[in-house]
Image (cartoon, rainbow, N blue to C red; front, side, top):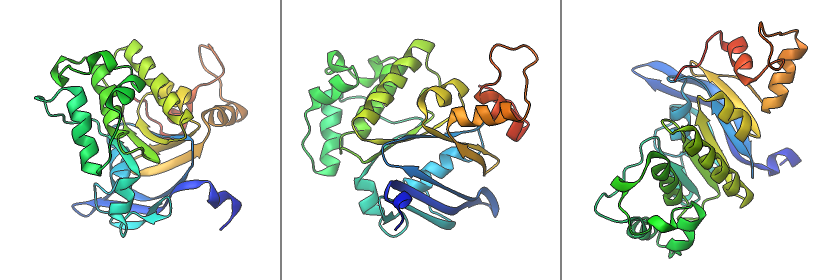
Length: 256
């Protein structure tokens, strides 16, 4: 094992997913370093969520290999599930249980005891402990989804488009929460189609389009590389940003 491998908590090698014989994830490879925020940026239909779902053991892998903390995702599904937390795009809650009761229920699935108030405080929802999910705003529901994903103290937290549909302030609040989670030693892997989110949050970034990864690097290195190749904006605010990198690589603009 090399020195680089020691820090890799996720390793994906030639990963493939097919639907009706068509490849929607086309043999992609990447690694995630322990303790970083790693992003996958791309438009809807790029294969971002499908990639996460294979690593999370939620979808079968049709080709290639993925390991998480040394466990083979195909062969060691139960071990993988115990060390990951998952926030889906549309997390379902029990509408007849309040937030405190729901966290206790989620913890029981893992056979662990948790301090529900401490966990709710971490996501700034302690005052909503006795509230029901239907009473939460969009941003509050997303923060509660993240709290639910943290009940088993995961090594890796997966966030799938965590700020879609949120207002600007709610998005920024969630960004702050993700940064705090990383400070606690949890590796974060997220998908997004928001350029500013990827640029602000991610230590490293994979740009994905049509089932393929175009490039992986830090957001700033991607921008600097584009500028070094002579890129200039028609109306210059700053020389280039992450959206310019994406358009240069894929020929497409991301739209909500």
